[in-house]
Image: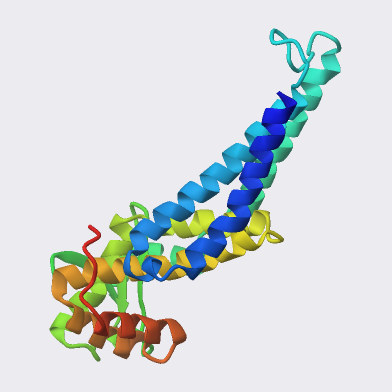
Length: 253
């Protein structure tokens, strides 16, 4: 049992070290972002499950199957285990990344109706008065897609539809969950390079995946022009426009 546990721990550590190197250096992840996100999730799951299973096997080695934690030896054993489980749960809650106050403000604006709504390409969109370019997707029952007048007024009809399609893809593909999990893992184990790489890659890959969904709906050219207006000066915006200018977007649904 000890040998199996150690083997699982070594395998888990190997996955944690090698998977980020492979996934961050592979060119195919740019063309197939959703597949890359799945690979990241599988690597993290294998690493966590393998490590926990390995540690469990090592700790429980040579203990009776009927009472592996030896609760019968002392009543305090059960209390200690309960305290440890509560500590782990508290740590998981503490490192969980929560939505920022700006998301709460958007939800309140949508819920209260203070932001007028327009239907753009079949999607209800809250439009807020703001000079700067802003477009975001806020998950949840009181969330949705929000666009600022400073951005909407600068876009043509097809470009605005492309922006809305991009934000809607974030909602339908639950990108906020993927980013939240990746950032929570980064906060929990910031000393592990794989955790930092996963968080960075996830934030980029969800943008590529949303671009692909929007491009399939409204066309790559309209989306490329919209990105130039909304985010053309940032490094990620430049990569997105270059990606949309190259070969046709892959067929990931």
